[in-house]
Each structure stands twice: as structure tokens, then as C-alpha cells.
Amino acid sequence: MVEILKYLDMKKNKLVGIYVFSVMLLFGFLVSCSEEDEPKDNTPDNQNVASCEGCHTNYAHLQAVYSPDTAAPAGGCGGEAPHYEPYDRVYMGGEDYETYKESGHYAIGCVGCHNGVDGTDDKTVAHSGDFLRHPSVMAEEKCGSCHGDIVDNFVTSLHNGTGQKRKVAIRSGFSGPEDFDQLPQHQIEGYNANCATCHAGCGECHIVRPIAAGGGLISGHNFNKTPDMLNVCVKCHSSRGGHAYLGVAAGTDPDVHLTNNGFSCLDCHSGAEMHGNGEMVEQRYAYTELPECEDCHADLASANNYHSVHIEDFNCQVCHSQVYNNCGSCHIHGDGARVPSYMDFKMAMNPIPDVITDYEIVLVRRTLAAPDNWDVYGVDYANFDALPTYNFTTPHNILRWTDRTEVGSSKACFENCHIKNEGGVLVNKELFLFEENLLDWEIGASGDIVVDGKLPESWFEEK
View 1 (cartoon, rainbow, N blue to C red):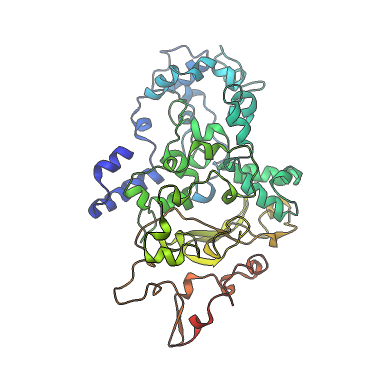
View 2: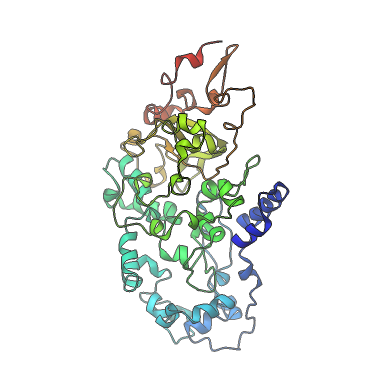
């Protein structure tokens, strides 16, 4: 992917549209080319099926013995998950499977990870006893013997859901993620059935597609050390990260780190960050492994006059982000997001000043939180107002020139960001989060971060 992008030289504007269209196809509908082109074994009797490997490499046999789905997989924030037939999800074949057979993981054997019974053509017997469909749910036992440090650290990883668990626990009247297990069991089951469709384990990044992407083996059971950006990362981070980075929304452009550099997610977000360091953090922006703009862009404060004036006022994305996706009021396992997805851009008072200490005004994004999130499970939030309904955000849709940085030669630098009273009309007011933008039930939770009474009075005076 990176080589293709570099070859096309995405700096050339005429190619940007072609690339975005192609990525949207990949993003929404297609599996990888390697999967699509792999020949499938349609001869039912060409191989002994009385073994795990024999069954799962015989496509026709899988079609003959598969069990239909009883429920569609949860799609998460990105909408409905794409559908793969049950036999396609478990078929091991093609070039990627041949690569897997040369690996150390293959040498462990099927029952070494999945348990169950080998050497039988009876599907029920093969999947009996302590059979594990996804061995990484028991990562300490199944993965830890070889990858001990990673497994130990992942317990508190953000990809293991600690940030999300923290908010559910706090709004439920507890202190943080360490108290998540004290929630009512049916609420925990609701979390696992809904939220955990993205926050999952080792296999969802390295072996199979995430549940939100339709599930199933992504490359013939090969273990992919580097997850595929489109089929893994973007499939979970679809409505926000991928949506922005790829420039999917009408009127937006792909992130400059993609078009100019061909970066994939892992060019900035390392494996060490994904796996965690074993330390429980308050939330993701408190995590020490997060990448910073300054990691690549040195001497930002002296780069230009705009930076020298505002480098300590607000985060980089205030100037360099485009509009980004928001939605809210998610009814878990019910009606979905009742504040439908919409494109917006809001600056507010910093909602996490104890974590992000540098900035007073930052970009925020509406969350899914609502007082009745867990109604379907008979659970009420005991302390919903403990956290705002807008989060500090750093959208992955960076451009050098945006609606705020691109001003006319005869205009002041703040023309497109400061509020101005022009004949009684407050220009640029829509960029800021005011109390009038909140729903009634959000005021108690988010009232402290609105900008009412906190901006210069001169901005509101008619000139």
C-alpha cells in the first residue's frame, strides 16, 4: 500500500480523487486482493477431513457441514458489519496458509491453541470439551508462554478497553477501570456483547478480522505481525479515525500524512503503544506511549508567527483539523446512536486539564454517553454527570491549510477563528461549544467545558 501511494505521488491533486474512491471501495466493501484471488478447494473428497487441518482446508466440506449464523455480528460505531459466510470465515487456504505452515505457530498444532479434539471428521466431537474458538480470550495461558511481557502488559492496554471501562465504571458510581468487575453481571455481559466488539484480544489484530469487520480468518490463519490497516485498524476505527484519515466524508480530504507520506497507522502508533506497558492509566491521553506532533515536527514554536503566538494556547488540531465525525446518545443493544452521525468542529474549555496541562481551549468530540445507555439491561447510571459528554479529541484529518489557516492576504490571521460581531451577527460562533449547543440532559455533565462567559468580551461587541 505504501509503495503504491508513493508511486502515485499523491501530491498531484488530480490523483487524490482516484485514490479516495479506491480506498472507499476497500473500506466499505472489499476484502483484500489476496483473499479474493485465492483459489478455493471445491473438491469434497480430495483430502482426508478427519483432522482439524483437513477439514478447514477443504472448502467444499466446510460448505457441507457449516452451521448458519443465528445472529448478525454487531457492527459497532461504523454501522453494520460486512457479512462473510461461516465457511469463508474459517477456511484456511491459499498462499497465506502456506506461509503459516512454515511458522512456529503452525508447529504448535490446532489443539495446542484451540483445545478440542483432533483426528476426527465429526464436527461436534472436534469442537467439544474445552474447545476455544478464539484462544486469545485466554491469552495468559495460550499466548503468554511465548509472549509473556506483551500479554502481561496488555491487561491494562487501551486496546483492551480500560479507558472505556473506566467511564462506564465512573458513571456507574465507582472510581475507575479497576472497579469495572464490581458492576452488575448483566451490565458486564452487555459491555462484552457490544463495546467489546472492537476492544478485544490478540487474535482480532493479528489473525482474524475484528468482529466489527465481519470476523473470520483474514489471511489463511497466518499470524500477521503488522496488522492490515484497512482490514483491521480502519474496520474498528471506522467512523472516527479511518473516516477522517481516508477523507471519506464529502468535502473533506485525506490526512496529509497519508497523501504526502503514505503513512499507515503503525507509522505513528507503535506496537509498544498498542500492547500497553502494564500501567493502568486514567485515560488514553494520559498514556506515555502516545505519539506527539513534536516527535517528527521539531521547533514548532519558531516555525512561523502563528505558532509563536498560539503554541501554548491550544492543541495543533484546532488549526490543522478539518470537520470530523460526531454522534451520541447510544442506546446499548437498542436503538443505536439517537444523535445521528454528523460532521462538526467544536472548540471548548479543556475537559481534562489534569492530563493535558498545556492548553486551555481544545477540540472536543461528542461521545456516545447518555443517561439511559444501559436501560435494556435494567441498569441506571448512578453518577452520569461525573464526566462530560464531549471528549478532548485529536482528529486524524490533518492538513497544513484548512478553513482556519487559509485567510486572504488583506485579512487578519484570526479572521476565520475569532468570533466577530458583524451587524449583530456573531461570525465564527459555530466553531465553539456553547451551552445552547447541549441537549437538556447534557448540561449537568458538560456545563463546565462550554465557553459561555470565558471568551474575550470584545469579540461580542459590534464594531
